[in-house]
Image (cartoon, protein in one colour):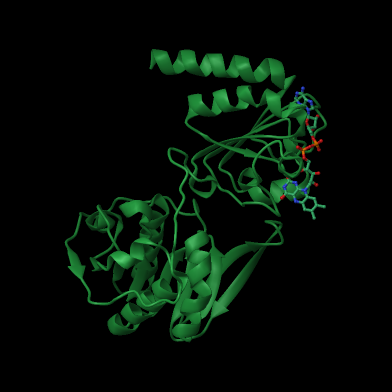
Length: 319
Ligand SMILES: Cc1cc2nc3c(=O)[nH]c(=O)nc-3n(C[C@H](O)[C@H](O)[C@H](O)COP(=O)(O)OP(=O)(O)OC[C@H]3O[C@@H](n4cnc5c(N)ncnc54)[C@H](O)[C@@H]3O)c2cc1C
């Protein structure tokens, strides 16, 4: 059986969980087995996981899971995987998935490949999986031979596919047992976190001054996008550090990445070159970013960005 851990921050199943279930279902089909999803804590739409391929949704209702504790979550997933005889456990390669994958693989004595980006191939009792390495410059292929296998799936690597129908949710008895006590949780309301954002509007040193960021924020508001920045911008405290994307920042895979006044250094590209569509706005036609762009606009960002925003607003009003 393939067990998929479906993340549900603030009680709602994440898009990446639907991707993981779609991946789990396809992997289960390859193995000739079923795909079961697991949710923890308070969850509103757990049954929806059936639409994306889970034949059953197991749920541990303990409200202690509402505050994330990697020890408790890994212990709960391991216990369910053992009870159910799972041979493959699929997680999202999110900050949550990254923090539990190692613990889980130790508990299950399982081989782990983190950040896989395509379906496995089955070779007897082994699974072959692929992931990108060296900041996306190469693809590595792994063979996992352990009885239980743990895979974490890159965001946006698989499109959620609605192939089934909602299923009923079965409660499983287990409690959260961790040694971490959460004292306070601060969340940014109304902003989609960068790793989950579908559209990202990002800007670099070409902006010249933090006071100029209004045009970037206006464009992001029109597109309902999350804002990001290059490293020197965060290092200069022009923008907060949590917006810094790249090799040493957050790696993202949005559907649309708009890069404004960013040169496209290799360390920046390492964190964004898995975006589905890249649009680059830069006044230098030789800027390296244009080589990675799907669409490029050569021009002064202080002219282009406000005009783009006005056109998009007109388009939105007309449709
Ligand atoms: C170990 C290491 C790790 C690093 N990690 C990261 C990382 O994670 N993320 C990251 O971003 N960087 C990282 N860097 C830094 C990286 O090498 C670059 O220095 C950085 O990305 C450059 O940022 P930038 O493109 O904003 O600035 P610049 O390189 O200064 O580029 C500014 C761009 O704006 C354009 N521009 C200027 N004015 C205008 C205008 N009016 N209209 C339109 N375009 C304009 C210019 O043509 C230029 O292309 C790292 C470096 C090292 C050594």
